[in-house]
Length: 138
Image 1 (spheres, rainbow, N blue to C red):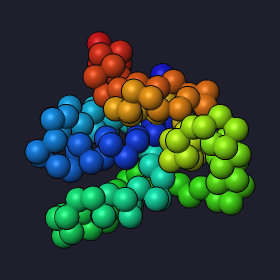
Image 2 (cartoon, rainbow, N blue to C red; image 1 turned 45 degrees about the vertical axis):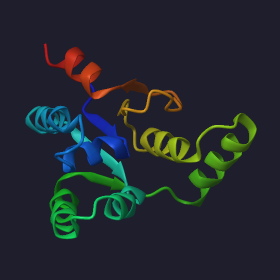
Image 3 (tube, rainbow, N blue to C red; image 1 turned 30 degrees about the vertical axis):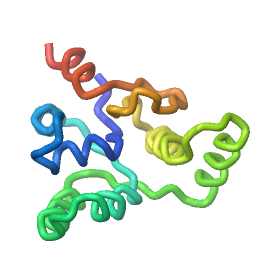
Image 4 (cartoon, rainbow, N blue to C red; image 1 turned 180 degrees about the vertical axis):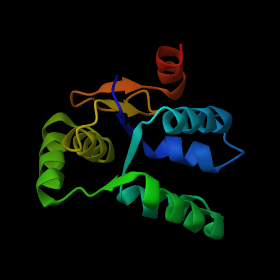
């Protein structure tokens, strides 16, 4: 079983915002991953993105303090950014998706969970939250 899972930004936003339609599914996903020993991986740029989007600053900062101790937060680095830019230029693909996918691959994740149906796949297994839970929570 794969034990290292990269989460897209939209999963974290769903988790943090009770008003989002997939909030409960995100809670179920994080609970499942945590209880079953998965290493959760996100990219460091998500922190500023989430902080910008979700206006409950105190809640967000406390969440960040919690995940810093439990999740793996990875950096892109110049080489990865250059690779993503080159692919984005040649294939007209979303740069953010590319950087996240390449970062997940660099971090040895086999699974990336996203709600973005058009997310670029750089060789990982992509799941939506529902698909992942249906596949692994048998």
